[in-house]
Image 1 (cartoon, rainbow, N blue to C red):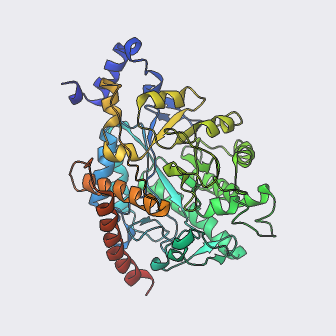
Image 2: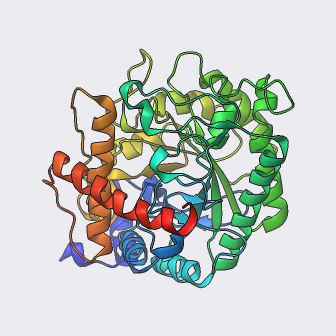
Image 3: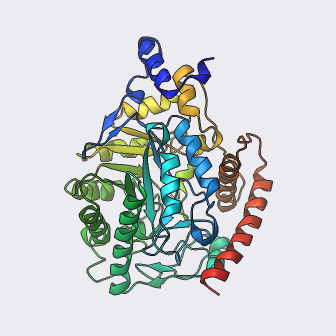
Length: 430
């Protein structure tokens, strides 16, 4: 009977059982700097869904998926990548929102995700050089430095070093997408500046070797991020939630590191942000899946918490960290470590109602796939394929499947991607 509780009933239950469960902070509201209140501290963090319909628009599958998360108890939902340029996509099934994109599908998406008093944030992004070669389109980067994935490097195209006009165009695109998100009814946007995507590429000295105003010192490498945030705030006003996702480190030797993140956060303190999400890694060093590209060992859960603790000491903005969380005890550890929000992703792909279940059973264990093939790149792709397979099942009204085959999931994902790539190229590239 307890699992049938509504969210409000569940909160009453938690208050009644507070001394026994000791989970009050996780289920207490948080008021962000702009005055917006989040009903609890759990955030469904962004995942790569690749579930867009024709013309890179959200449709029935995404609405069903987000409705499941809203009903499942998350206080905040951050969408998967919404690209600011349909000619620069991380995958063929991604969503894009531009100045001339129809707004109605996005209004319907936001409405479904805002059920149950859920706050909904659109993550907005540009992939930069992290565009698969088979996709075509724009492959831009601060410098013309290609991805190094060993024998898999050929999956990606040599990027083009951006001109000053192209940089300014990207800044304008982020602003436009944020304004469109606001028009559609989203509560805010999160600017993606992590995981090796374009803004992260500007921040890293490994991928930004420019000698103009956009490169060199860390302050110059962070200029594009600062300008995007300033322009979005100016366009959308103070009531709109504005956040940034930042790497705690790239986990590559010579890359963007914890000390750099601290300096960037110090500058972000003055930009009227509402929260900062700390993650880590890139395609070259997929630390967001628990694998670093240097000698540092990541925790088995809450991968970046030790790094986030150092960075949060310098932040006047609420901090959230994401990465591998599947137990309530670990979520509590995060919240007891100077974090205000705890981000969860893969565990909510396998159980979108995990938050509600924790209300009545604090020992419920979430599940996160962990493929451990010798080829780390293929392992990473397989883990992503497993997660995306569950997202598609939820979107089609089915239950997640806990024992899905990693190999079969990867094959199915590749076949699906090939079909969607053909559709994408026919519409935009060929």
